[in-house]
Image (tube, rainbow over all chains, first blue to last red; front, side, top):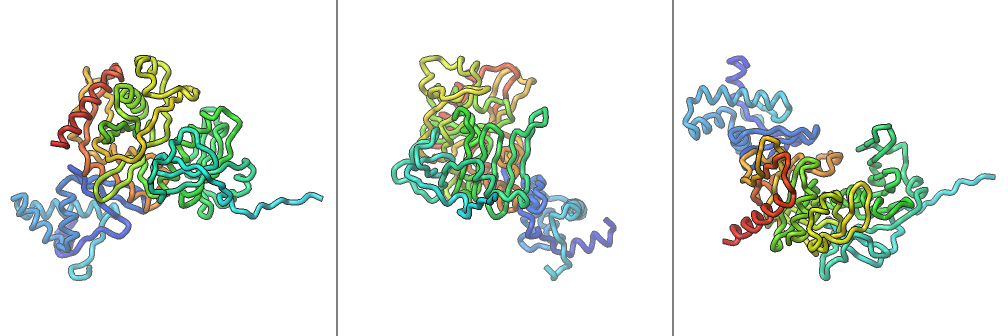
Amino acid sequence: MTEANGRLLLSAHARVPDHVVYRTFVRETVVLNLQTGRYQGLNVTGGRILDLLAADETVGGAAQRLADEYQRPLADVERDVGAFLTDLLDRGLIEVSAHGDA
Amino acid sequence: MATLEVDETPVGLKAETGWRGYASGLVLESVEPFPGVQPVPDGFPADRLAAWHEEPAKTIDRAWRIQDNQVLLERRHADGRLFLRIDTNGAIGFRVCAPYYGRHLVSVDGRSIVSALPRVPPARWQRLFFAQVLPLASALQGLSVFHASAVAVRDRVFAFVGPSGSGKTSFAAHLVALGASFVTDDVLALEIGDTGVLAHPGPARLSIEAAELRRVPSTQHSRVGPCVGRSDKLMLEPTPVPGPLPLAGLYFLRPDPAHTRPAIVASERPSSRPLLGAGFLSYLQSPMFLQRHLDACAAVADSVPLYDVELPAACRARDVAARLLAHCELTNGSRRR
């Protein structure tokens, strides 16, 4: 992901599309694509990111919250969240819309 | 001149029912008592009703529009002969067919089952009926079905999930022999509610290797029930618990030659994979069934303790069952404190 794309992503909203559901288990979150029947396991942090995004946080807002909760440098968290969401995007498990369009 | 006989009466609407039994969460209606299904308890709600009746094979074949069907599952013997085929037709429902085991039509809503039974010992066609047909009807009526055995200890159900050959049936048989109550041998129907997870007893059938049954002391044979048939295994008829009970614990059976002694430990591993993999009717892939299964797995993981049973290569099922029974009692005790 280029730096410009990264900045765009941080200002965007990301959401789980209608054909995707996720449920929280004890030490993980499972994302299910209802169109393909494929499951994707996420660790606790991944599940937390989905929860923050579901609460209408922008990607950047979710990264800020995570950085606060985990007491990690914001730049590191933004990079990790960006890579994580890009992966989910490639798998069709999230949709990204520009800030305000969601 | 040859004439074409057309039966306009839809299959599934002819049932004359008089008897009601209960298994896998369904109230099964039939003309006569259905072998292996216990009578429905007094006052038991009949909101999940399945009417069953028998028809000649040609009637089922006539009702099934070949051109419209979609094969969901097909298994063949090593020599290519058909072993089992399950197909669906959107308008009629599902057909479950296995040569020498019978063919069955299950309606889309799971409320009607029509069977053509082959001229074989009843134990043979009952295997297919209880292993595939009844679980399918349960799933179509909203229950979540898992590949698991289960017993009840003090009116709480403990389920055992594991790969084929890991001992699900053997442990259940020995647990029942040691004093637990029988719930199910192979397929567990779960009902997810606001107050927790309810486990429904299966049919009164337990298929066990003859060698394993010999390890049950003769004084305890009556607990696992009489032998009512045999094929590659003995088919026993234990008495299931009379109604649904809360699920209280789930054990993942994990064969591992690296272990030297069996051990029961709180599961520290992510639980989703073995739970999701224990879904019984994996050919039901519509979004509704997929989401229901995920919801059921999440509810189980959230509401009951999960344990790993680490099993060395050579361990006696009876010894492990004795430890499991003590562990179930302990789990019950800790919930009550």
